[in-house]
Image (tube, rainbow, N blue to C red; front, side, top):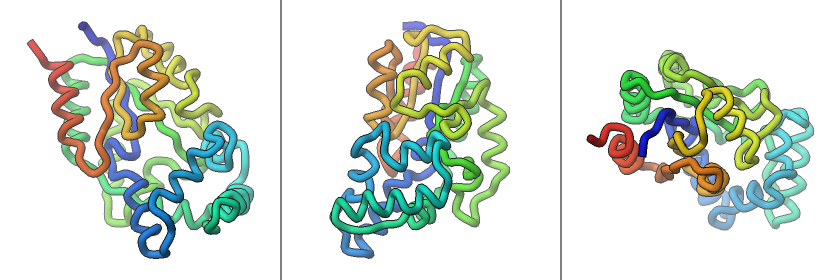
Length: 215
């Protein structure tokens, strides 16, 4: 199969996953395993997290709305507490993989669910270099941020927007994400998908390189 473009998620692909931070918080505070993720996945297109990623509600509204949702699920966690857990670290190997893909002549894009006024730089651990973000962004032909576009993964429209921006058909694209729920609609429209395992990007990089650099 001949590919023309590689499309990446950001958090959990170029960086550690917020899910890892959620798990640590849950263990520390005696919450059930995957509690936070379960709340985020409930009513996935219309819950507080979804609305905030589309910039439909303010930070204060998200703070209270997420607290209500988690309280209803059994353990109250405020929205601002959740945001404080978004402290991520880079995977240099994936940053380098993007550069190799770009140098090889593929079109590149990034589809990221992010938060109003909290872009990829704002989600970094304090000791991470922001120059790395600049390097990553320079290797993308196009970036779609949910908080600016008003649409988010896994809504099919956001994948269609990227294909239009890159002028490619879905079946000419490879898409990498760490969440299966975000891969499903991409795969349904014809993209070849790669799931990035939480905590270990090496298998995904190997799979990507097999697809784009195979003889």
